[in-house]
Image 1 (cartoon, rainbow, N blue to C red):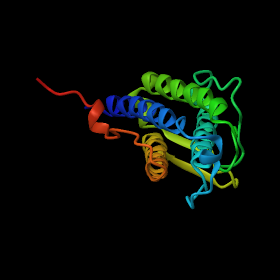
Image 2 (cartoon, helix red, strand yellow):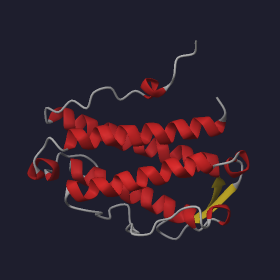
Image 3 (tube, rainbow, N blue to C red):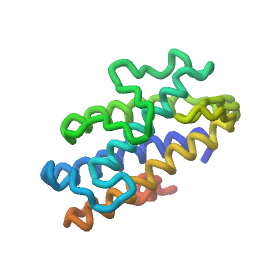
Image 4 (spheres, rainbow, N blue to C red):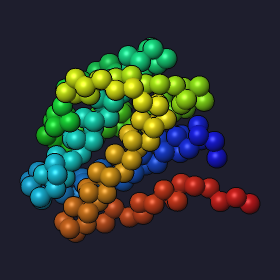
Length: 177
C-alpha cells in the first residue's frame, strides 16, 4: 500500500467511525450526552466537540499552507482558536458539521500527491509557537488524534450501555484474492 493509499484509507476510516459514533450517541438523551463522565473533555458531547474543533484548527492551518490554498473550503464552518472550543452544544447541530469536516478530509486525502506528503508543513500552534514538520507526520497525528479520542467516546458510550459495534480499521481493509 502506498502512502497515498494509506492516508486515503485513514480518511475513509475516520468518516466511517465518526458516523458509527454519532449513530450510537444519538441513542442517548441530551442530558446523558452532556453528563460529565470524568473524561479529559468531560462528557461525550465535550469530546465530540474537541474532535471537531481540533480538525477545524488543523484544516484551517492546512488551508493557508501554499500547496493547499484554494483546495480546502472551510466556508460556513467555525474557526476555533482553542481545542476546547464548543462547536455546538446540540448533537443534532454538531453532526452535520462533523459530516462536512469528514467530507473535507476525504476530499483532501483524495487530492494529495506524494510530493505533498514529503513536503514541510509550517504552522503555529494555538499558543503561537512556530512549527515545521513533515506533512505526512502531521497527517498521521491528525488521524491518530481522532482514533485516540474516539476510543474514549466509545468507552463512555459503552459505560452508558451503548454498543458502537466493530471499530477495527481491519473492517475497511479489503481481502486480497
